[in-house]
Amino acid sequence: MESLGNWRRSSYCGVPNSGDIDAQVTLMGWVQKRRDHGGLIFVDLRDRSGVVQIVFNPEDAKEIHERAHSLRSEFVIAVKGLVRARPDGTVNRDIPTGEIEVMATELKVLSVSDVPPMPIEDDTDAGEDIRLKHRYLDLRRPKLQKNFILRHNVAKATRDYLSDNGFLEIETPILTKSTPEGARDYLVPSRLNPGHFYALPQSPQIFKQILMVSGFDRYFQITRCFRDEDLRADRQPEFTQIDAEMSFVDSEDVMEMMEGLIVHLFKEALSVDVADGGAFSRMTYKEAMDRFGLDTPDTRFGLELTDLTDLLRGCGFKVFSGAVEAGGLVKAINAKGCATFSRKDIDGLTELASTYGAKGLAWVKITADGWQSPIAKFLTDDEKSSINKALEAEEGDLLLFGADTVMVANTVLGRVRLELAKRLELIKEDGFNFVWVTDFPLLEYDHGEKRHTAVHHPFTAPLDEDMDKLDTSPGDVRSKAYDLVLNGVEIGGGSIRIHTKDLQEKIFGKLGISDEEAGERFGFLLDALSYGTPPHGGIAFGLDRLIAVMTGSESIRDVIAFPKTQKAYCQLSEAPSTVGSKQMEELFLRVMKKTQ
Picture 1 (cartoon, rainbow, N blue to C red):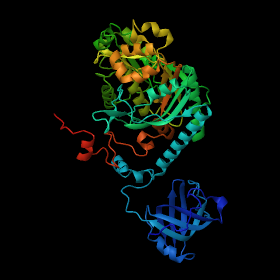
Picture 2 (picture 1 turned 180 degrees about the horizontal axis):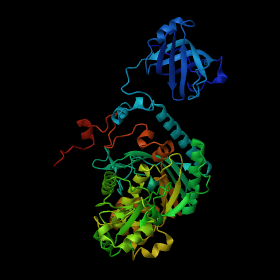
Picture 3 (picture 1 turned 120 degrees about the vertical axis):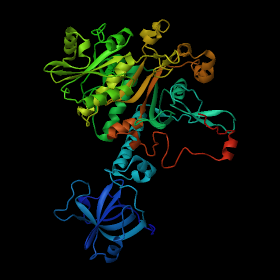
Picture 4 (picture 1 turned 180 degrees about the vertical axis):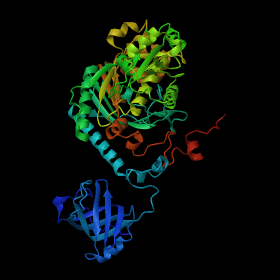
């Protein structure tokens, strides 16, 4: 293979255009395709900027024309040549370089390639295992490269906006103290402190609050976070946050500043003005659950939930009346025009409902003859008429019911609603719909652990008007928490924090954390709160999720350079892996056999 020698690239492949005709260029990249048309050989040369057509003509350069016969897909080459207009009838309007081609005068083959195990093109049918094992090939695909160029632009625009608004970028520790609350920590053994462990941070939460105590006023960081939790399309064991915190603010200040950030990012990175309609819409947690069943409401389409609890209290259908008697809900969706759904279609929705805790999914088809449903015989004509009125039911509609605890009934119908929207193609994929969800509950009761847990995290401040409920009905206390939801995906969440030691200790007590345990786990924060702490709050945006929505990616794995599988395994590097006995001894560790 040849070296570059004194050759220097004059341009990226996707740059030359009709304004460069008759210019001499030096291009370098990968062979996308080679086409031999008898006399002429055409090579599509690709780099991260795009593709340009190279022409090898035996009449102009016989020697390099002969060498061009050996070029194959993914060879790395350098070419010198003359830019010229493409002949009439051969212009390619689908690519920026489609009006020109480069007549090769010199060629260097810098590196050859084995036959790739997958095609380097956007419409690949290669399985994810192949793609992740050969991630360096997968990342050559134009679609993924565009994802990472956009990700870079978003990160740069983030730093520009926050810096211009007085924020300081400050790093916080990666090796820190384990303060488990929610997901499991990843632990790192300390060689110098045998038997002791660091934890990788689930977020910089405590440290950014301490920075506010330290007087830095406005902090941000584009930071890595780690959570040992079960994975899915929008989760990875390591992920990236845009993390920010502000002093002397309330919820409105934080939301206004961060709304400005999002508007800036979309304008700079996508040239899209998401502020056309003014400020982002708002709704409380209660409204989101009432109307959409989920605290991540997708408001791009209707199919909203209707509460039938009071209407069906004491009805003859025990599934409904029993749920109400137990303090639960009965809610329903009117899937307009879906009475044509087959039993198989409805069974599919029922199976989906069961994955979210439902024992079943009651349904009614509205026909010319009235109700067609297994539950029709359990309800009176007046009850059927009242349900029809509440749901604005008409002939041809399909009514779907959820009856269970408040959380299960809402969640089940919220998920069924999203599935119906996909099946009925109700979602416009080319828009960006933002909504702030506010006034989340501060605490929720965990019946398994028989104690309250924090809905967001234990450092979230209660609403001032609900403070008197902390002692009498803590489950009714609302918090100063807020999430930003984009197209039904939570892209960011934050809150105003507790800034007094007394209130923080009280909240720890409501969470079942003793004074001794609080001191052991959070002592350094409690100490900091003793020395004059300003009111403060902030937010963390999931950068991976944000980029996935911006690029229309189905999984955040397509916007993370080297992601892991659902079992937290890296196909490329084969991590995690075992380590040698010497390393284990140095860390005073040994592996125990798993017992059944």
